[in-house]
Image (cartoon, rainbow, N blue to C red; front, side):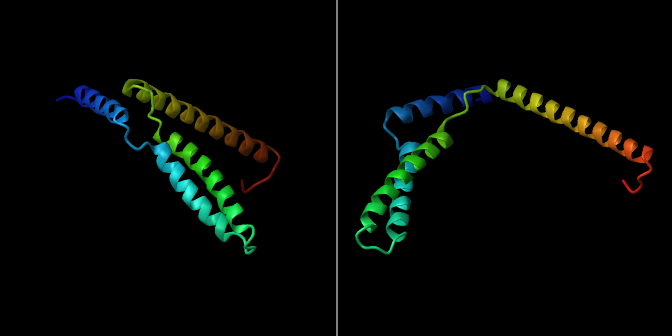
Length: 121
């Protein structure tokens, strides 16, 4: 089995698992966030009348935040391997160009300081 067949098989399994109702990262994040938010809200106040209100608000906020984080972490990258490689090459080329520009600016600053008689730069 070559790499393309392996990748195709993995994607097919991913689709089949999502159809079976597997626990999604969003659900895991939401439940974890709700639990931690509820605990933080309950422990965050000393007033007995406000403990449960804070726990519910913390659980709601934590659930929403956890669900959003789970969605962001669980969203697959939609790029093909070739597109991903092209993106990396372009990013590296851009970083190299930025490095050249910084070096040129440093040389220009060094020359300006030397022309002004400032040493030690």
